[in-house]
Image (cartoon, rainbow, N blue to C red; front, side):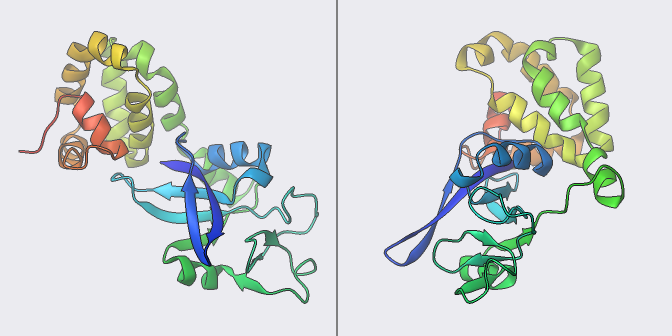
Length: 219
């Protein structure tokens, strides 16, 4: 799962803020980020337990991304992304230095392209977005659930769509759909069901929320 993050300094210590909305793919999160680049630092990738595992920095240079050159470093104080020209003479951090300072893996986002290796990678797993979008209105359909389980078995990354779809349900939705949610839990691939079972030990994590709403619990 991916979320937009903010980075600022508090009493000389870097602090990370996390937006609550989740996205299935880095591409989708980056698209939302680019609509308000001055408001965020980058995109965070969270594991199934809700732990920030990686920070993805966009290549837009400057707070508004109005410089045509790709960013390669960040300002050491403001954490603005800067290209080699704009950072000349400034106190900056390379991406590896930033990662060491934060204690979290950091990388630059791939250049968006219409074709080529990166574009193929981004388009390889679109099912997560569809699962998240359709979940509330389709989980009652046994054929849809069967297709969902087949997709989860084929593509482990599709679980992000399941987590977002289940997490987006209102409390009333959960009550109304609970019999179908329990049925889905029984139908899930064994590896997915076991992962969600374990995650219920951390009930505030995205996977923990999904597991509990599906009626799962650690053995």
